[in-house]
Length: 163
Image 1 (cartoon, rainbow, N blue to C red):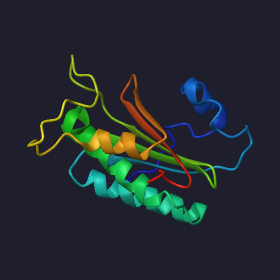
Image 2: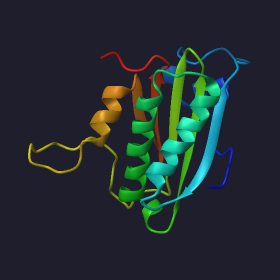
Image 3: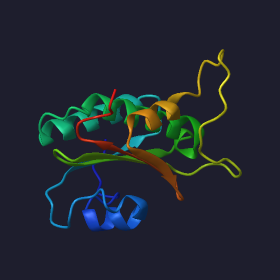
């Protein structure tokens, strides 16, 4: 895994990227814990993404949302490999940023999709063997989405999803 700082993690830039969530991010100058990596777009990407998130959140302290964050990043990374050019010899860029005791942000960048494909939650058939990953991401996060240019993201409260 190559370390990179391609995804921004400072509160002002995050608030500008996600204006609907601007009130969620702490004030400029808040201490953030972040870790980024560039991973090969292979089936091993999901497990490497989970390790990256676990290591970052371990540095931040005991994070009750760590398991949820690991599941979310593995779903987003697996989708990047399966549904974008990242899985055809490309790369997946993963960043986790956290404001301890406040929130955890997962960013997963891919190499772009083929023309006409739009990320989203597909209609489900009860017998389908796949297609539920984004439903899990949505259920476990406070907010999630896809930004143009191949950036999937999810924001979790530090305490994790209410169950």
